[in-house]
Amino acid sequence: MAGAKTVPMLDLKREYEYMKDEVNDAIERCLKHQKWILGPEVKELEERVALYIGAKHCIGVSSGTDALVIALRALAIKLKGQEYFDRADHVITTPFTFTATGDAILRSGATPVFVDIDPLTYNIDPVQIDEYVAQHPRVVGIIPVHLYGGPCDMGEIMEIAGRYGLFVVEDTAQAFGGTWQGKKLGSIGTVGAFSFFPSKNLGGFGDGGMTCTDDDEIAELTRMLLKHGGKDKYDVDHIGYNGRLDTLQAAILLAKLAYIDELNERRRRVSEIYGAGLCGISGIALPTDSTQPQTPQQPSLPDGHVFHQYTLRIGSGKRDMIKKVLKDKGISTTVYYPVPLHKMKVFGEGRSVRAAELRRAEEASATVLSLPIEPLQEADETAYVVETLKGCFGK
Ligand SMILES: *Cc1c(COP(=O)(O)O)cnc(C)c1O
Image (cartoon, rainbow, N blue to C red; front, side):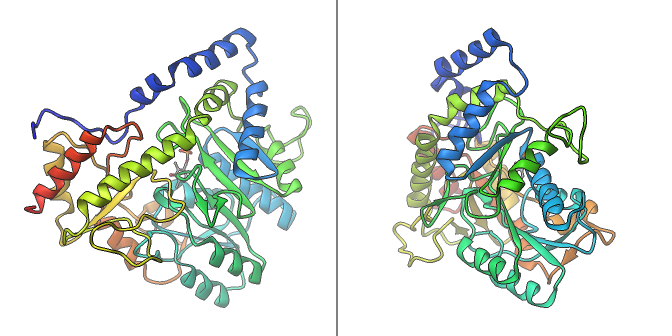
């Protein structure tokens, strides 16, 4: 095939063209009403997402990171009657995630505890959560991350949380619209935190996020914390933030929400083409449903996965070489994430705990490679990626 093709990781211009009229109309309506702070679109988005996710309360916030921080702060106030957690309070999470997951725990005053991942799904391993919690009474909660859009084992996680009285904050930043056993991700734990960062499955034209919960008290505290810490911003109760979702972002997100199921389905279709084209190549491990038997012809895709990323594992130290070959042929790829959290300086100096050796997370960091997965990617673009990659393995 001709080498002139380029395939980006994501093509936001293409997505904008696809829904231009609705998005432009939404922006125009804001220009007319000029209600930039907590305007009508914020409330409408909150109500629409609450229906979509199946949560009692959804609250717009300024980013996915703030959604996590504010959720944890609200939990500290509710559970401990104090503004922040203590360093002795342990919150379990995965080291194989975006920095913000662990950073939010530090900013809430608690200590992040990293447990290792399941090597097939890249998500936190419930067995290791259970082992740590059984020996450490100071664990207060768990933050599972639905990495790459794939659901964590929420059945096991909620069972452990129930047994020990722990909160669960689902980091659903990468999995808007994803499900676990038919339930929308973000609606299963105590709180779900979403990001509307432009590259996420539902992305705005800037930063944005949302928290979802069925808990009335946490919802009320969240609304206070994102408005400086009080019901009345001129007379506040808590150490708060200026953490609101912009009206303009809410308006754009409302227009894009109408397309989310279609775009997630398109992501799944791209991933089917990758799966069919790349299976059976030794040296490449595909995202698969670890609970189902696999056939060499067509690996079964994980149920409820919304393919924020389509991530391969390329062993034998070849990953970086293959990344470069693909780049030279116009194909962008990304390593999410090259450094696991426990290796970062910010989580050093006694600020975090390693529950055990985190070898699987370290191995994942050294071997994963995410391919372009633009929902509007054409079949021939996906085929070009497949053929080029097969060529790297002499197929
Ligand atoms: C993007 C992301 C966040 C943070 O969201 P922002 O909106 O960028 O603040 C948190 N956790 C994960 C797993 C993410 O991918």
